Image (cartoon, rainbow, N blue to C red; front, side):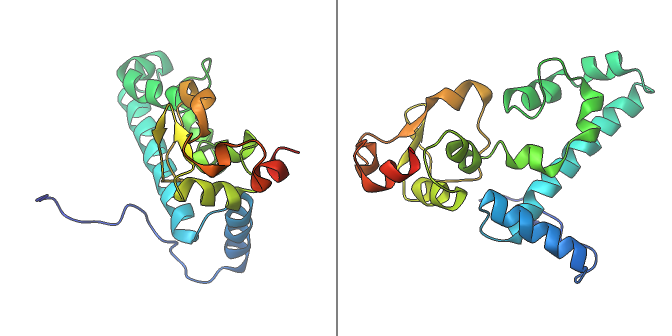
Amino acid sequence: MSTGKNTKGYETPNHPYQGERIAEESDLLSRYGLKNKEELWRAQSELRRMRREARRLLGEAQGDVEAAQEAGSEFVARLRRIGVLGDNDDISTVLSLDVTDLLERRLQTVAYRQGFASSTKQARQFIVHGHVTVDGARVTRPSVKVDVSDEGAIAFDETSPLADDLHPERAESQE
């Protein structure tokens, strides 16, 4: 059993009702097939932590991007591995990232973009029901960040009925 404090992995908005923010969040929820606002807030908090780390590294290096890049080499390498940063991007690029950059790297979105499902919601269902594997391992969490190297290794589980190309749900999504 863990001895650390249990804290929420995300921050809720400061103000409960702001029509514009709610409309924006609803649009992102439907576009990325998220289950609820909590999933969006988790992504926003993760992005906030990334930006905070980048600011800290840049601050310690007194704005010297090269020194900050060196100090945060593991941090930048991780962001490149999950595809949030490109190979040519430096640590200052982290400050201009948007929450959609993170949402695009979720297994749910990557599977949808690769044509495994006809919608993000369907991709989510296929993943949760255990039909999708990444690098041969079944993954049932749609929020997993997919490494760039694993993008080509996403497939239907061979024991899944969806592995058959003639499956009716596959036929729709392959059009």
